[in-house]
Amino acid sequence: MSKSPTPSERERSDATAREREKAEQALLPYRWTQTIKDVDVTVPVRGMLKGKDIVVDISKTHLKVGVRGEEPIIDGPLSHAILVDESTWTLETAPDGKEVSIHLDKSNQMEWWASVVSNAPYKIDTAKITPENSKLGDLDGETRAMVEKMMWDQRQKEMGKPTSEEQTKLDALKKFQEQHPEMDFSKVKMG
Image (cartoon, rainbow, N blue to C red):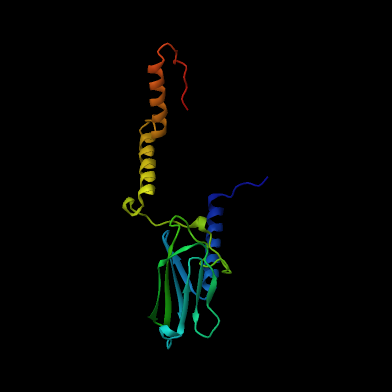
């Protein structure tokens, strides 16, 4: 029977995995970052190139980036679908040449990507991502309502009061008791 790693062993293992991941990502011919809502990709290219020399094809499920007449630098199915109309690319001057900057808006803005394209040789461990803090106002209506309910329920628990779900059950029981005064409810257990 194997035992769970100690916190210090887990910390060392995580640090080793982060270093390996960082080294693998450095081997890619591009850099990329993401938030929960979007992915930004930067592809270095030679300094004398112009926009007409660059090939960027962005579709809902595929990305191709390269220099016209050469093998593509990126060419593969995206890890997840994107919003094509909200995605853009530009050719920018960089200290050591130029770079193609690509901005992709995720279709599902509630998931992390392990890689830009699914055929990438290296993937990141999305379970280890620490999301940035967000404001309730940044959330869509449905998500915001769910988060506010969870926060209210948490406060209720901290005060020793019933959560919204528990309160609904208590209200239903109370209504049933009022409709059936002849029944004995003294031994009713909620939970």
